[in-house]
Amino acid sequence: MQRLDDTMKLALRNNICYLATCSKDGVPNVVPMGLVEVLDDSTIAVVDVLMNKTRKNLAENDNVALAVTDVNRLVGYQFKGKASVVSAGEIMAWAGEFSERKHEKRREHLISRLRSETDLERISKIKKDG
Ligand SMILES: Cc1cc2nc3c(=O)[nH]c(=O)nc-3n(C[C@H](O)[C@H](O)[C@H](O)COP(=O)(O)O)c2cc1C
Image 1 (tube, rainbow, N blue to C red):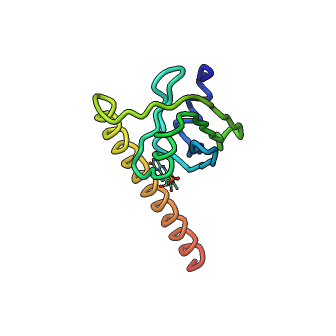
Image 2 (cartoon, helix red, strand yellow):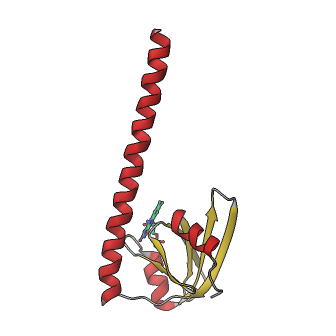
């Protein structure tokens, strides 16, 4: 896989990615993945919590592509490489903690968005009521 620069790392960490796999017969499959982290300049981790066909494909064909659009910068990237499935050891503990952290971050983001939407509703109500 190509070396990841800082803008690529930022895009991968802050956006939904699309993971493409392929069966041994060449049938493609592409799905959204949010639990994505850059481990080093040429390794990307994708945490499996709900994979089904993806997992089956990986067992028979290790060729993958991962696509992402940085929605703030309006640039997109595609990364191609070979996947290794890791299901034991230190990386599993990291994956658990990483999923929890991401989940918590998303929850906080949602709460603050709902708060600001509620604030906006309140402000427009105050304006309407005079
Ligand atoms: C926004 C979004 C992010 C997702 N992130 C992940 C993820 O990081 N890991 C995962 O295993 N599933 C994730 N999923 C769920 C899979 O995309 C979904 O279960 C998919 O159907 C799996 O398809 P498959 O059977 O082709 O593997 C996500 C779904 C959405 C909509």
